[in-house]
Length: 238
Length: 238
DNA sequence: CGGACGCTTGAGACTGATCAAGCATAGTGG
DNA sequence: CCACTATGCTTGATCAGTCTCAAGCGTCCG
Image (tube, each protein chain N blue to C red):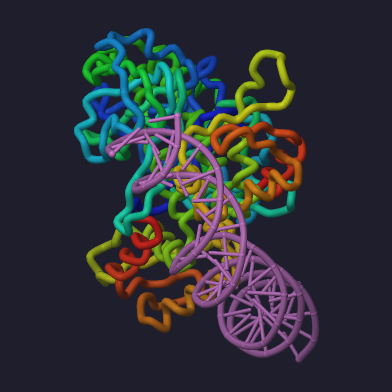
């Protein structure tokens, strides 16, 4: 079981002539710190950072807020790759265009880093490339785990996994009940887990009834029985 | 839609102190050529190259045959990450241990490359690290596509996708009907696609009835209507 | 020739998606 | 300040589809 808002890469990019591709869940890798940026921008809720197909000439480091990466299919359906928080870097693309779209789920602050400058650093700094490779691999791990979770379906398992994945790193030693903030809509989560929003609701309701979770608001729940949730998540695939 | 036996990474490895992690579908990246190896070994059918949890002190370049990467879950179920052919490299791990098991689906010839030598090259050759990053990202792309395919289920879409993914690069300009070799068992494929073996069989039978494919043997089919298969695969997620 | 294994096919139970309709909350305008 | 509207969460009933349990075959091997 991994940690919070992992996942959510954007692969493909033509940095350094042909190099990098992930834009992972770089959880505070400090990669952004080494790169010159154009300063921090304020992004209002539900605004798009970039669309699938746009020319991928920059990557974004999230400073505050939550960003969602998604892909729209021909059928009109949507698939979301992941949700990202402060410290993550999105928009890492290997091709000329972004392969996915990115949208602010909450108001966000992001640092824009031009691809050319990233390119320069990549070509010069070997250890930097290594860190990037490492981060990409980490993303790959998360993606593979998610792949298994999603295919060996079972709504309960998926939702339990989602809750555990997004639980706050058990903040200050206050309540030992983990808190899960989920500012995204139910539809977003459903698209992330590959299920219908109704099924997601029913599953959450069942969790409440069974005393597994406690809902402060629809966008914030507390986990009352983490062990049991872990079992559910494991049964689904592990 | 990607090509043949892609996917199938093995992430995590402690090369170069902390670097690489993927062991992707490195389709003839030539990475193996730059590394000293202990020569080629013959692996009989159904023999295991390494088990999940084994100390990951080597990676393997496949010379001939097909290798399958899989993970066994607590519930006894199995999930296969992918099938790999000549040119692919398996066993790329970032952790001390292999996170997955690898087994020969057919008799294989593999080149064993010690992790320490890989480590040395990685630390010295910057462009090598870049190629690895590139390959890892490619693997990530494939994994993400697979994730969507598997979650937005629909047996027909999954199977159509599988067939197209594994079709031979339309060999010699002989028959323009693509050939798909699938030496692995139905159970293997089902574990790969996240469905029951019975459902896989039924779907294949239906494809035959509808004239989409032509079965020479259970392990070799020809695609009669690639366009339609593509549509099915796309409907499932694209 | 006999047996084992794996592919294939059949019938029934389960369950998640879909179609529809309540409810609550937040935001707007009078 | 309050009513109204809109949006999105929640719940309900129905239906289609896959998994499961079982049983036929065919092939390969001893």
